[in-house]
Image 1: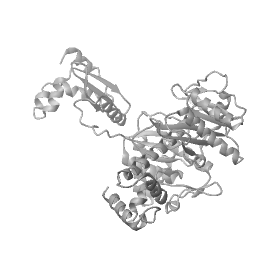
Image 2: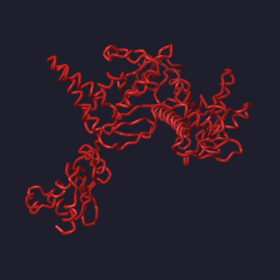
Image 3: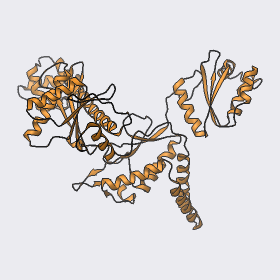
Image 4: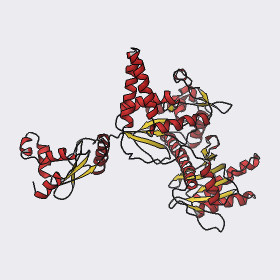
Length: 487
């Protein structure tokens, strides 16, 4: 071993970490973890190591190729394990065989856009404004921790489907879990959010008091010779301790638990509104090269999605690719209807796009002969706020709570529009099978879809049922049924 490399090994610390082995070209060829960096890395340079591995040619070749290394110190073995996996995915070294299946450690996700947020498990963190905890190295223990957390704090996990009651409260469960949890099953949103706050504190590691109480109860049960219960508590304590003894987080907290008054107030001040916008609507256009052109409108109330007021639109006034005309049409249709129904306009209308889109939206209000509510555009490239009047464009800091609220609103409109577009494409693809049926023209095809409602229902129909559609006799109905069966 060269003298400089020998000195580098001698200088290594006796701490946990990750080491990166390099070849003569400086390429990372292997990533490993160690409880003690000094002890682990030094084994690669022991005299005769390569000869001792003559029956393991891959490892022997790796050792012979190492000419340098780097190390990264961490605080614990679990952190070393997590960092090792992350670096292997990043560098994909030639001699690593673990992690090649792209296995990831579990995260706990809290869907903060939901009325009743639930704690779910995922292996992928998305930029979706949810709150994430982890990663956690012990998946089995984490699942047990969440199960205990459900009982301790009365929060919902991914298998729950809460139902909103007529009085505004929520029923959390419709099955036996309502009896097992030990918490009131019908609860207000505010009370439930208080439970979620406590659960978040727990997942953040602020759970020493609860762990102490569990240990005390475990000792008391053991003293009473209730060994079965004591063993159960011991397992819960072990699960919590090992799960929470995780490392520095490789994730970041993207948002607070719920949109709050601060975001609405700061947005109001930034836009020069008279009061915080309690009701906001956002429009987005979605298409594929001018085909399947659709639009969405989402509605936020007090900074939260109000899905009962979401709307989606198929473009009716033209065929082709024109975002401006599409925006003019859907904005006009939305507020013409509100005028006819004598309903109030929202406090703020947000258009996904720049000057062209906001000019089109403003034109629709001119054609309606009514003054628009507060109206802005949000241009995605630089998150620039565009005004319909002479005011200069506005760029808020990326961490500005008002801008973050606008981004959530815009992203939800984009998601809703894309979902509708995908549904429409899927339906059209299914319908296209009828184009290949001999003797079936456009009128008969339209009559079939109007009669049955979908291709799936048509496929399930018998020849006799098809014959009941307008313009179909028994002979052609039998021929069509045979075609759909074979297609």
